[in-house]
Length: 155
Image (tube, rainbow, N blue to C red; front, side, top):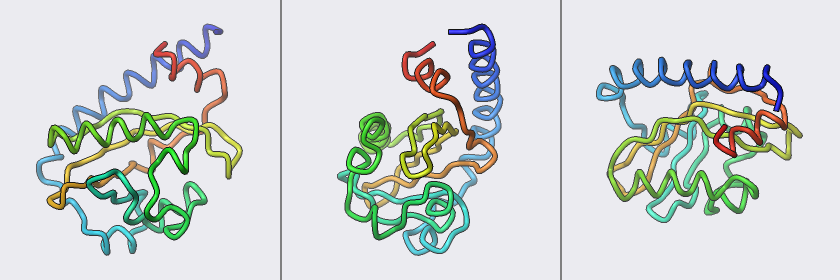
């Protein structure tokens, strides 16, 4: 791994810490949206049921990832994001089992777009036993394969 990639990851970690501090301050005031609110939203957001199956994706989610609500509906992340879905499901399970909001970076290969992506992901428990997820649009980044592998390996 080259020095530039390591420095970039260190910078991303610092940005994450800053974002988490900001999100901690406002998270308690944030509204957790209903399925209909998500479907009609331009934000990058989705809703999952208590088993982790997709209930709805927002217009913003569809635009960002090229995946429609109908394509994703009723599926687990592992069925849509083959290489990375299990990580997403583990984070969802954590939220469902603990009732604690998950805030952290996730990285994936978006086969439809042909690129590696990374973003700050915020997953919250919902009253129906499922989860609600959103991605601050400004945190969505295109990364290269080397950065993706380093992230997955915990470097």
